[in-house]
Length: 333
Image (tube, rainbow, N blue to C red; front, side, top):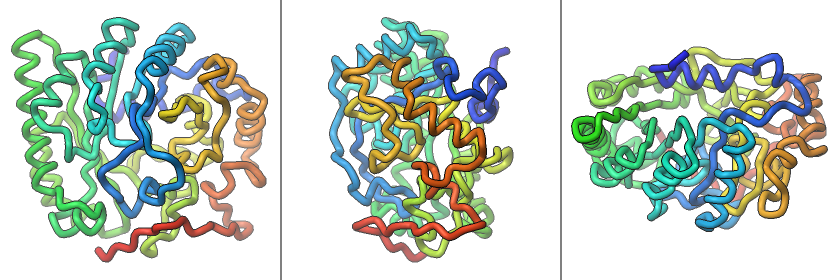
């Protein structure tokens, strides 16, 4: 069945089918691959600014080899991003075109912070075959944007979203292809949704759909920052949250870092979720590695104490020491 709303795709990937509830599930239908680990924002709710790893671009030959191998393994949806900002990658449109037209992915998607996603670059991406572009729009006004990201980017992002709509429509008129255009916003606290209402109203006429996300703890790395209380684990979108255990992320979606590591987590900023080196190990072999099997078994048992997932889930029945990351950004909202 075709899915016309991005929320349907989000809910589909965060639902763990019965045949995937095993330590050795089939190849995931969706994989995110990191074209670059670099990011131009340092958002307080993201551990990217903590500089816990190198920030480089993926080698082109590695990219083409990996996405070909993953497609042959059965992967159907390719996200050309992971923890970095893909619009910083100069060959972004080329990467999309290679995935769509050379390798044959049915669905290629991308999430951006929006600052570098200008109309011209977005048009290149849609013309290359991008099926879905989503803007992470997480601020109520210019002041909060600068406080949260450490970059004065609010007006730029709003104008880029408007430009993206024009670019999408131009590509559709020229080629008949219509990619999706979406936006999401994070509820940092109980008041953020109300605080952001006017800003969201500015962009809603230009996107196909807007939806809300809860505040994640980024595998425990940002839990408690600015006094915020994140949800346990990665529970999907705010209006249809999943149970934190077992975590859907390790069963239904793959995550590949710029240097070719297969990560078990949506938020592997420090390498603790490394399940295999894809520069030396086939994708499906790493996906079903012993290390990955043990982590999935713990998730299925709903007891991840002593595993890499422990800090993220933040058990209430015993205390977990959450280490403070270096270069912590302190923001007043």
